[in-house]
Image (cartoon, rainbow, N blue to C red; front, side, top):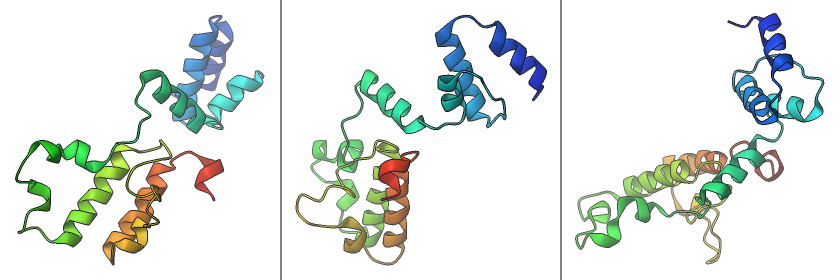
Length: 152
């Protein structure tokens, strides 16, 4: 309802610290202009540390381990390897791998396809045309909310 008086009243009446933080996260998600006198709550409302909170939650849920698109396709279970079949254009396969990789590993900051440079293969330059655009966008998705690593 965007009634700042009700928001202020609710935030001031709430005495449970965890509930206050959850309300602050909700205000931040809605980009509500409410300003808290509590510095920690204000950082949460302004989404200043959103990447840190997301990665912390991922660690708590034990889902931080990056996943390769083949893990999603479960292609290791299929003898035919449907995604890499003879009738499928390799550019389309690479494009599909790029998109799946970015959504599966979104905001974790690491993955096994684009940021994995152990073989000195840079995925962005390995693909062509639309694949390069998709790979650059996927890199942005991998580094979502991370202003420290994402900008470099």
